[in-house]
Length: 261
Image 1: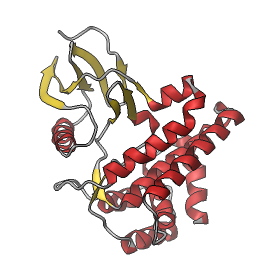
Image 2: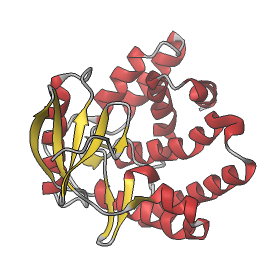
Image 3: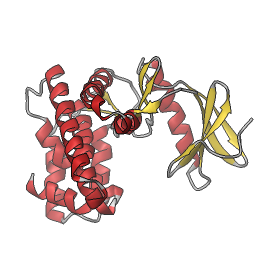
C-alpha cells in the first residue's frame, strides 16, 4: 500500500514506499506522460546490460499520476557517507572512478546519442553569444561519436552504497557516446558546482571537494589513459550545454570556463 508521505523527492518525482521489497518513483502531474515510458525503457536496458543499478518493474498509475516501480535498495548515497565520514574520501573517489569505467565499457543499442543531446542544448541556451555557440558546435562536430554507455549526470549523489556494493541510480540522462564526454560532465559537476554555491560552501569543504575531484580523475585516467587528450576538448562543450539547464548560481563560472577554453 502506498504510504501517505514520500520518503524522498526531487523536481520531477516523489519516492514512496510501495511494499517491503519495492519503492515507487511517482512523477509529478506536470511531467509529460512519455517521460515515464522513456525511463522504463532505459532502466530495463541498463539493468539488463549488467550495470549495478536497482531493477525496474512495471509502470503504475496512482491518483492520476504515473510512476515506475523499482527494487528497494537499502543504503545511502556516496555524498551522504562522505559528509558523515570525511576520512572515506580517497576510497570513494576511487570507487566513483571504477564504477564509471565499468559503465563506460558497456554498449547498449537504442540509446540517444550524447552528441545530439549536447548539440540541441547548445543551440537552445540563451547565454552564449553566436560566436561562442558556433565555436562550441564546431568543436563538438569534430569530436569522435563513441558507442559506449554514458550516464550523463554521474556524481556521488547518484551512487548508492549498499550491503551488496555500490549501485548507480537516476538514468534519465543515459546516452551513447564517448566516455570522455561522461568524464567531462562529472569533472564539471565537481568543479563548477562548488564555485556556483559561493559562500554557502566553506573553504574547508571546497578544498575537500577539489581533492576528491583530483583523486577521482587521476584514478579514472590511470585505469583508462586519455591517449588522445580528448577530455580537454569535451570540457568546454559540456560546460556550454550545461548553461541550457539554467542554474543561475553556476552561470558566470560556466561562461568563464567556456570563454577561456
